[in-house]
Figure 1 (cartoon, rainbow, N blue to C red):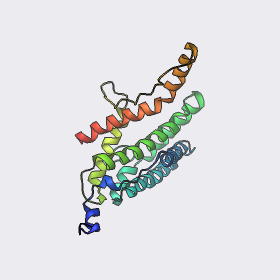
Figure 2 (cartoon, helix red, strand yellow; figure 1 turned 90 degrees about the horizontal axis):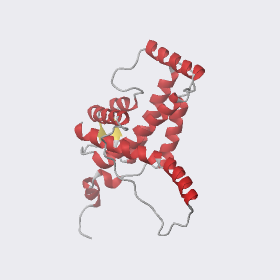
Figure 3 (cartoon, rainbow, N blue to C red; figure 1 turned 120 degrees about the horizontal axis):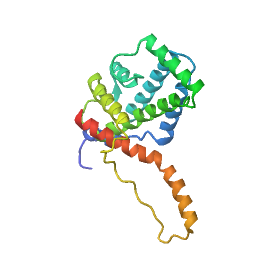
Figure 4 (cartoon, rainbow, N blue to C red; figure 1 turned 90 degrees about the vertical axis):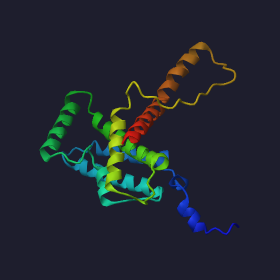
Length: 217
């Protein structure tokens, strides 16, 4: 025993040391629920559902790091649309009508659920990343100004994920010592493995875009 009060040690420990992982399964449930909100066949209700879902998500992420969100910070992070000004009822109705036309006359009706799912995933994943690796504030509350800075970085990352000048972390390589497959099997396996690697490739690019944005925020 060194005589040091363990409570003092805990208070001085970096926030990252107390991190409780969100987990891919837990985030996957939020993502699936995000997709479901994007398919609700009503003009205004989806935004309310998205706000509730995202609010629960940001609370869950923050709480797992021992942090609290002010009401204003939760509103900023859970807002269905970028910026501080929510769309008018007319704008929401027009967007709803456009999505219905796309679903009826084109094969693009799946875009709204996919977009909602992707945005939900990005919010949970990047907020978790920010708190675990980039947060420098010692306060146990995330206030509105900090939330606005993080939200801008998240929105920037989502928009710039496919930018050509990004430098994401390299994927870990994996190869057997001896490859016993024939050439056709190697080609077919390569196609399947490449497709399976797309989500990981996208996440690494998302992380790189976010890290760049939060440094500049």
